[in-house]
Image (cartoon, rainbow, N blue to C red; front, top):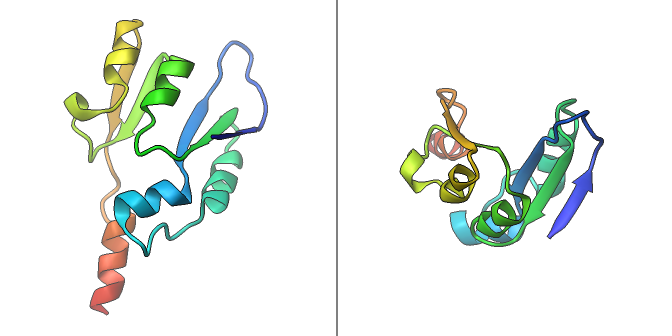
Length: 118
């Protein structure tokens, strides 16, 4: 596990967990990821609100969530709240799990399929 530290916010710390290239390949196939972990980390680090970025090689971020104990856990709309890894840990500490809607047509998998069709 590697942590890229960008900066600190007064009273709040926003950290993001990013699958390593190795774990993306295991989960999504040999032709993935499209963007390397370095590129994905650089894009996130460019956001002013980001304090830490954790790259993990496990299939899920369960260990990191248990270690960091975030107060808010956010996942994309392709997840059902009952299936979100770390939900029980966050909620047991009084935290909140939020599912945000996906942007239609912006899925990497969907874009790959569209390119294959053409």
